[in-house]
Image (spheres, rainbow, N blue to C red):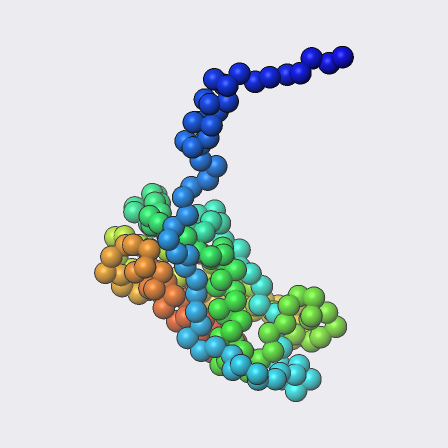
Amino acid sequence: MKTPFFVPALIIGASLSLSGCISFGAKPPPQLLTLEAATAPTVGAQQDSATAKSIVVKVPTTPAALATARIPVQVTPTTIAYVPDALWSEPPATLFARLIADTLTAQTRMVVLSSIESIGEPSASLAGELRAFGIDSTTRQAVVTYDAALTRVGETSVEKRRFEARVPVAAIDATTSGTALNQAANQVAGEVASWVAGAR
């Protein structure tokens, strides 16, 4: 017959008291940030790749400083900090790619397809690297820098162009930084859309 195993009450009490002090993650901020397209697709509008140009917008690559949901602050050329209590709802590269897709749809009427949807479909491709998506504390500006790489339909060559927008920030906090970055991202997305639409 097996002997029952009892945990002394003293140990149980100690465990319960410690459980209130243990944290398995950082305290979430009161709100999460996201990007909103200044020119969004019309609700209910129908698109057809048979009658309109199509394009695949890929999520851009990023440096390690942007591979996080936090907003980086360039303190010196070799030093980076982060805005306190500021977190994106998704990785910045994913939010930025969706913003470009919405802007392309609204401004150019192009049909934005996923990589799977584009199989067998003659589509252009937009890729690139999101080089900067944060705050420059020395100039007190929100900075978005995107190195775009466009492959036209039926071609193997790649065209590259750098886009950058800078928006002043009155304070380096979550709300102000998020608003300024949204504005800068929309400016870049609009310029990218105009560039793509002007493609031969």
